[in-house]
Image 1: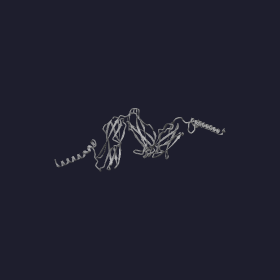
Image 2 (image 1 turned 30 degrees about the vertical axis):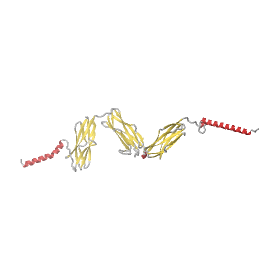
Image 3 (image 1 turned 45 degrees about the vertical axis):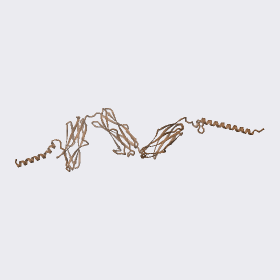
Image 4 (image 1 turned 90 degrees about the vertical axis):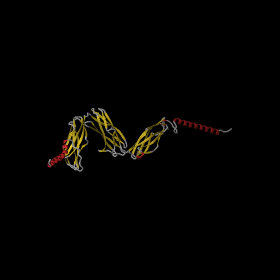
Length: 411
């Protein structure tokens, strides 16, 4: 072989090797490409996710492919979507995307199928020698039937600061619906979402997944907690529920009004009974709801007939004093039924509560019903008067006899 022939053969070999990557790139799946630092390039990514569940009813469902410029890349990117089965239809919104330097764009892609199954779709972007791809995984399932509805045990409520309550969230199957329903709660002050705001109302669901049986209700529990020092007074709690294929969506709004800082007052027990002259006790309980201060007590009895005293005329409550304070009310008196009103006051805040007290025994008669003297009963009073009359009579007779003896002359 001559030297010229060897030179021609070498050139042919080098040319073949230089074209091999391009031939391979277009002959099958795109190769893994490692971008060179500083070299203009682009990237592909699935948005919001590369997995999607759709009903096998032919409806089209949308995802996006993101294309981003790297190191100042600009130019046209040819797009191609290749499903692994003809039973799945994957359609790109653009076949050629124009990318500007330092920017990005989204190309939508829709998926549809009439056949239940698991599929994959490879989306390839090509620009000259640059080739990148991203894969989607599609699950086509049997469409669900029917619908569902959500309701709450209360649509609106008022709460005190530093308090908690629970509501029932019912999810009800309609027209033979079955399957999972995903439930979430979101809290808004006005129109502002209060995510991670420690001074705002907190809403927590017992579970975020309710499993539904055909035409049967499912129940979730919503716990509402108010902070001690709320920033906002009125909240909207939005309950969102999704489920089924195609996706069914329902929501409802609850209104929660959080009052200003305050305290409450109650008696334990709120009714007393005792024998005449015996003492009975009840505890005044003060509960703080964001309130910090001292609560002063006042006692009013109606009608008169029992005497009530307090172990403490006031109690501090809130913050370092704890969430509650107390004082003991002690009462005793004569037979009858009485109402005792206890008022707790601190500044402009004032609350009252009442208890009843029954004292056993005969109810004393009024002055118009019989004669009494020095607190004695009628019979005792009449006895005293009769005794006094008898004493006066005897005294008068004795004086008369004495005077007669003195006035009689001696013989």
